[in-house]
Length: 83
Image (tube, rainbow, N blue to C red; front, side, top):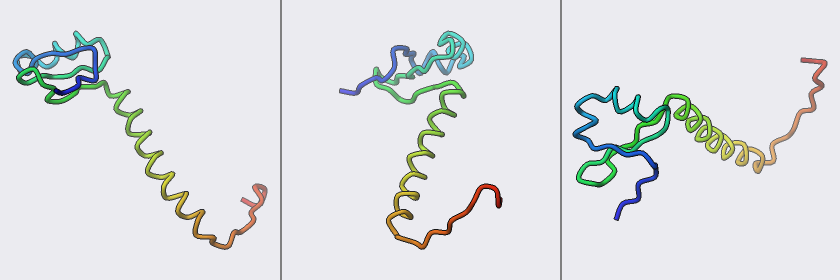
């Protein structure tokens, strides 16, 4: 059984008829598009996509930072006034 991770859903048939109408009906919220009663894909507003992209970037960059901190590289002291 598939889990639908949104409260709003539409069918692929309705979505294909007029995607803009379905997006407007969602009123800025995410919704799932179902094919044969199973989630086929999710539609989300650009603002939420941007937030998710930022979170993914933060997770990825934190791994790089943790790796570099563990390398015990020599540190250079810098004063903010010198920049």
